[in-house]
Image (spheres, rainbow, N blue to C red):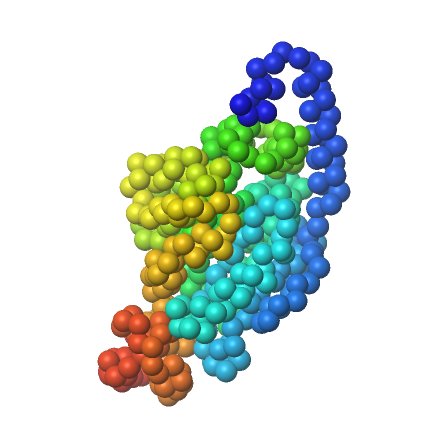
Length: 369
């Protein structure tokens, strides 16, 4: 039986006081260690950036992978994948994830894109804390995204953004993406949690110590079940279902069959279905709570998700660099991409840049209506 359930059922005041005291210590330690800036991560193509956040009232850091095409295609604009990390470390996944996406871009599986790694702190839960000390949601949505769009050549519209995350980040992707379907074309929830109705319902097989669970509950949601539920993606998606459907947001869930969070993800799949939200739900066999294994187990469907979500913004207008004109710059980009691949110049989305795409581009030559 789960430890927290045991604690609930036992009337022992000593046990409750002991755990509560440990939780208070953990909360104090977590708040003391809350850092809006991390140490830089060294990895190919990765930049460490700082920006001034109005929501946090201080300097905040993030990392961004910049594909080689960004420098070689000097006028092109690029889509952005916002990748939300899980609990424990804001920076540990960055080298592996950048290598994974960089390899896919070099092979033409997905178009060149920026991959932004926000700093969600160790246990920020991608949520504005109830006490206002850690306005994580506001920092990402109100400050980070505008900063990225102002400082990089992005496709600064929802059709050029995907939100994805794993574990804590998977839950964060759901809550932020469903809250603001006007900002993201795709929402990807991988091994997502917490997304249960009651945060203190410890998943069977969870490795989170009870005192840490109580500390997170207090630090983020003020130990308030109503605030926790109001900030949960399960509540937000029901409230925003019509907007998500109207926006045609691409939604997916992916999780390993051995993951302790599988039951709550299956329940969430049912919530999406009950509210008429088109989505995919994939359980990867024989995989535990590991992001790379989940992504790898999705196979071609993984790359199809990114390409379908982006639909290569501006593709319909044949304006490859999204500058409002179909001209020599677009032709140059097309010739540079000639051959197999799902890059921006693959105007018909058939997996190759060829004569069909060239014909489409020439037929739309001139200013975009």
